[in-house]
Length: 312
Length: 305
Image (tube, rainbow over all chains, first blue to last red; front, side):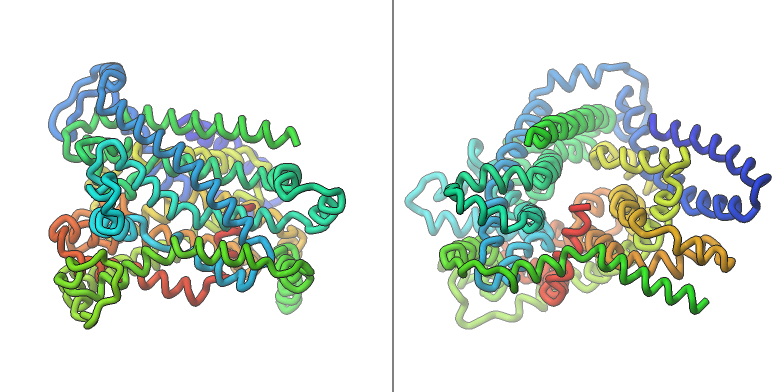
């Protein structure tokens, strides 16, 4: 979009610089020309397969195109209707609830595990290797294993608890928690490794000095550990929240949006409405709104978290 | 030319030394660590690791059962006798061979093309970041990181169908292009830490930019090539949403897609389904088990810089 035009404009100034260079030294200009040739094809390909679809999506969001046949411009109607559509609002509600809870749990759990792995324990590399296993598994496929667990094993194991005995995945109020469990289980693998590499940058002498001064383990964590890994905390929170907001595979594997539309995420709604619901234009508008929401959330997070970082 | 290779080797060592918090860390954490072994932490870590292992165990035991054995218990019991026939049956019913070939082809293709293209583009950007054009390109790719896939998804499907790219070749192209953003981010930071003097020496000897890249820069990029290769491989192998929307022919199905279709058709045939899940997860899992340290350090390197 804006960056695209910038790039084009910048390229023309680069072209004149190149001409000037030709007059000065031909060798350098040949090198410069090669550099331009190294970048151009990638820029064109990226514009064609990434930026162009985005622009087409934005374009059609102002029409009533169902995905086939004729269409007309209808201005902002799609956008206005989005905010009156209960199904859309519910999808945003679910996605945010899921993303916030899953982000908090992922970071609390993975930081705890990383602290454990960073302690002097036996066979550390072995355990570290085990905790990273979920990263290499397809969420959809391991999600089907979880689906069996929630719908067939858990009702038998916890037959005394009605919530689990009746298959939590068919419970309209609580099905989302099962999706959180799968999401957190998978995301922790990556987060643990990031936290662990953060913890390993902290020199051990700091802790020795702190214990001589009589600081409790909790005090050491809040005054030394956490401030020193806050950059890693920022990375993890931003990445996991952004990923969780776009949740798709986890939902498809466990509930497929059900029961009813109780666990329908924004991505799933765009996928369903856009491809099989004849709502190409309408869901394009939804996607544009979703893009804006995600960008605002990411930028906001960076600002808040980085300001906090700077305090230390 | 020999002088170039000599200096190349030397620089390679220097860069390796810069890139060695890994080794230093290992020494400081294991050999010089004078702390007493913390048995409580060890026990806690071991117990918590069960949450990772139990779902995998469940996948294995269910895949080895008969449907009758499965309905008897909770699913966790070890089957007696073991039913190995689930595997050939799953292989046949999900058309596993073809899905495996498709996924392998797409993954290998995506990794090769990603390594070849991302590194070249990053090199050009990193060495010319002072020029407005290259700076603009850098931020153009970076800005794309904010764009979520759902906004691309709907128009992309029309586009790939129109261009005849709704197949394995299209997937390779898409992974290569969509990976550019993050890969350029990973590569450029690293390339800028490589001293430029070395390239200048080679240029004096009359080497072209391509030649400098091929014989000096690319070999020095090996740690980052590993990182980018691993990230691309895991992404392309496990990705579900992109094959789901882009691929049209059943013969082009990837492994996750094949599981999805199978689940939709025979959703209560758990034992065969689990055999197929296990086979779909196995290849990457086996590679990971044998190259665990390398994979973890590769992924870490990509996210920290």
